[in-house]
Image 1 (spheres, rainbow, N blue to C red):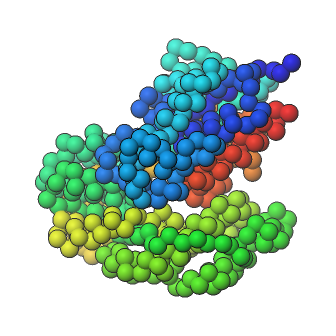
Image 2 (cartoon, one colour; image 1 turned 120 degrees about the horizontal axis):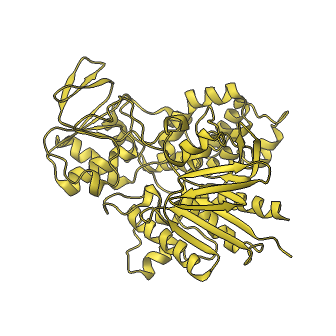
Image 3 (cartoon, rainbow, N blue to C red; image 1 turned 180 degrees about the vertical axis):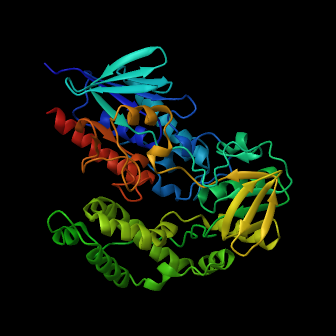
Amino acid sequence: MVKRQNIAIIGGGVSSVSILSHMVHNAGFNDEITIDIYDTERMMGRGPAYQEDSRHLLINVPTEEMSLGNGHPSYREWLESNSHEPVTYTSRYLFGEYMRELMTSVAKVHDNIHLHHTLADDIQYDSENGRFTLHSGDEVKIYDHLFLTIGQLNYLDPYQLKASEGYIYDPYPLDEGLSAVDDDRIGIVGSGLSAIDCIRYLLIERGVPEVHAFSRSGDMPSVRGTPTDVELSHFTYEELESLKVNDEISLESIKELFKKELAHQGVDEALLDRRTGNTLADLRFDVSHLDEIGRLQYVIISVNPIFSDVYQYLSRSDKVEFLDKYHPLIEENHSPMPLEVAEDLIKWAEAGQLHIVDGTRSIEKEDEFIVSTEEEEQYFIRTLINATGPEKDVRQDDTGIIGALLNHQIIAPSEFGGILVDQKRHVISPKTGTIENMFVLGSLTTGADYLSNSVQLLNRNAQKIVDQFYNQLK
């Protein structure tokens, strides 16, 4: 007789939807497996990235690359069947609708899958019987397995302004967070995709006269170039496996292999380090060289799943060096913005509606926010919007379920972000060691999985975790 297995999935975003999809499509799924998923009604099936919000917030990945597979309709097919034009870059809201419909449809046809529109308040682990006690409101439930898929942590607050009047610590959803912003002297802290979201919302939807974007570097993501098919010849699993010595692969050997691949693909290595420090000039360069930039980007996108897997084989010193020297170059080409978004930014900057200010040294709050730069310039801002992105250090997010898990010593922070996991994405507890019936997927594995938060990689890694889960049941 098959033993009943009670499973809890914490979080309802991309990772959760992917885990659920792979669970029910595995031959091992049966009526003796019960799955409970916990998240708020707003986030269930969407997650923070794809929550209901302004339709001007676009996905930065082409529609053709955003499907979840497993026999579900592709994203393009879903758009067409729901009378939406399958444009190259849709709103993030629409992709959230696609995911939400997928999750609810799976739950409807399986009586043993339950969507709980509430948060898990506390989780405890009994190492004697290997079970988890989950508290949610007044309800207490016991689970045999736990999947932690909560997505991003709380927002960074680099200038310690969270309690300041006029400071918007977390602007999402923008339809709510920025809907009542006064038009006079608006500043945005950050230059990444979140900052671009805020700029677009304020200038397109709110029609504010001007916006200042402040950051230390001023670097924005690159512009997505011409899509191209890439067949890797050198940066392959087989080649990298041959470089493994004592369960490590040296950064130097990985660099040489990557350079060899770039040369084979006809990509000028100098494009990796093409930034000049002038944000507008850099955007214009990318817009004018879409074919060359696209080739580089799609080589990076193609090697990303492989490097994400071998990242864990870097020594500590090599990982530190990589993150310091090479990660910024990879990151700015890994999640490029759509061409139309870049063209809008250039247009607004040239018209004086957008002011990109780099070299930010300090931000202080007096009657207004005083932004000081390395060039001894000062800007006086009435409303300041934080768009610096989420934390990576779980110790800085000690509220909610993360705080509870840290407090019980079920999880521990990784030096490189997220929490400690083994190579199979089991949690490594500082109190009880490896917990083989607790899996992690998403931003919490950032210290082990390199740039693995794209829909494609999350879905692929979910497949691996689910396969591992069913293998453990045998």
